[in-house]
Image 1 (cartoon, rainbow, N blue to C red):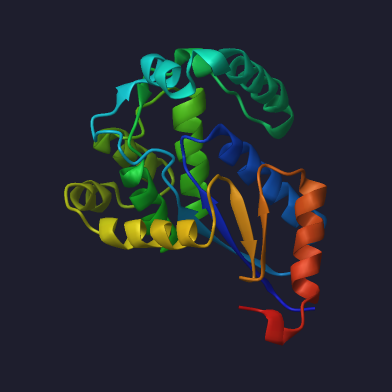
Image 2 (spheres, rainbow, N blue to C red; image 1 turned 180 degrees about the vertical axis):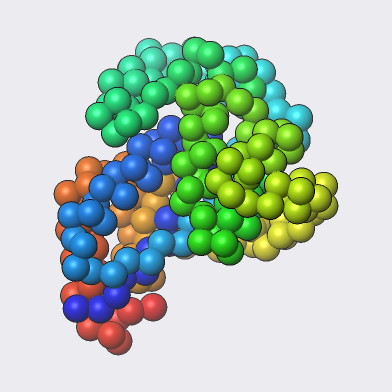
Length: 219
């Protein structure tokens, strides 16, 4: 069996991504004998959001549309019911701002360089969905960086620049060109993908499948 590399494409404002990330961690615990490397990749569900963000409730009403309100309500109720089993609390009704997530993606990327990428993602998810903090705010992102042991002063200085924005935008275009249209999306060894917040058992099976691929099929 070979090691497994997974590109996990996500957006910090996607509730399914938080659930999927928790399931992904649980999946790895089911196959401890297989070394897995995870690289978090950027995806913006709506890159048109201004840097200052938009009022969340108004934005979601326009985004979903009147015809889909019932389906959207059912989805939220499903997430709120599934969350606690994964250690997640979703407080959708209390969210005030729908942020632009580029700066959050930049923080996650910088954290990955310090082997803290998944810690950063978890902290950003929690800040947004559970604590109703504006994860488009440089001040909030700097506080999150400090909470996971990053150099808060350096992060604050970097957030004031466009550092790595072009790189992340290119990466997102690349994954969209591969056909990624929704998140979370797990890409295993560049060979196959699993989309959505699948159960840990399903993701563990995907890890086993990726580990069993002959080397020539690895990307």
